[in-house]
Image 1 (cartoon, rainbow, N blue to C red):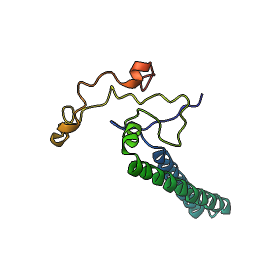
Image 2: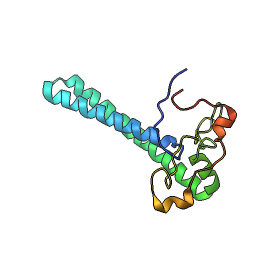
Image 3: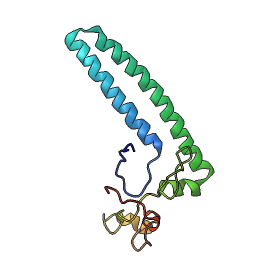
Image 4: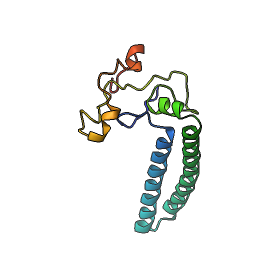
Length: 143
């Protein structure tokens, strides 16, 4: 089974637009590094690869824009489902449902009590029942 790196963020389930942002950023960095290798060596083969990567960056950014638009559309048309997805209770539309395990929220920190954010008192997460992922026996992050 392939491992997937998941960015650690308290309190929300990342939408796949984040993965596409990372892909665009990584491809852009690779293209810049190849252009730098071309400048240092004058070897045309580096310039060609950089051009190929630049074209891939353009394609990935288009996919990122489409994913972001779909996420904003969900927020506008079904804010309750958007919240369930964001909180990790169900997968985002367009993401694979088979094998989905809700995001563990049991290790989230309360912005008000753990982080001292006074304005977050209305969003207090202390005293919640066990998270949905724990109830179904999903693996804890890092296990």
